[in-house]
Image 1 (tube, one colour):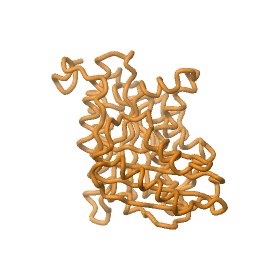
Image 2 (cartoon, one colour):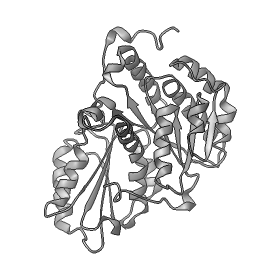
Image 3 (spheres, helix red, strand yellow):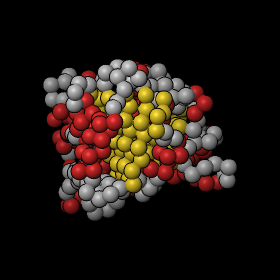
Image 4 (cartoon, one colour):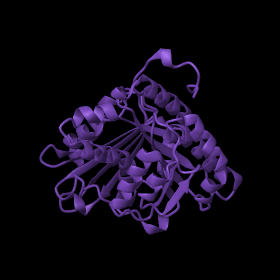
Length: 344
């Protein structure tokens, strides 16, 4: 499947789409994108730890603070991001239409700095009348249960703050990834997490750059995800007689994201693509439509895109993005939800 999902965004879109990884988890996700040879998307990394930045191949690196980290203190991370606002602004001097921001929730830098960085970049666009409204899509991970209740509480507080500044938030639950990949070696496990975090960039780019039969452009995506709240994304790839439904099931039954109910989605983007040699037939499209209508009890705003991608061979690819869905609460413990941040 990795070969099928490879993509190249057109170079003339460079700077319209930026990806910033904040903290060690976010930087690893950006490094994953860089290792796949992504073109046409600006890659940025930001951290309070100079060692983490030194190991990244991203074009732009932002060090906030002295390079010693935060000791897991999100309050310090917020302070350092605020104090280094000018360094952050310097990485966003060109027009940005879509910003993907990636981080792990529960630690210091990702939890504390991400909301501050998001607001700083938004303010840049707001100050310049020539800049369009910027779309911010956050992709974050939640901690393992074994990391403790305090870290989970920090993550939930950071996630709530992030929801107030980002348009769309996609949450990956590390516990669900662990359940699905329990036999995977430790080092490979985190590569899987990196793949999941970078998949929204890859899949949306695949939908935008394949040969369009029913088109979906940049502004369609911006319109769909603007004020999208908690957002689900799934991708399925299948071949054979029942490939359309099989791919749809794969996309909808993504066990790794924090989603409990998609039936009330406000808006849905549905992308289907196949190769010219093994083109999708109308009945396959009808099957997908019937199945999806059965899943969404409410009638969401629908955006359909159909494209041609000869790298798929005999496969059909289905990408589903649903906004304003109901998230599953992760690691709930009301005893830990008092002050916004613990006192250090």
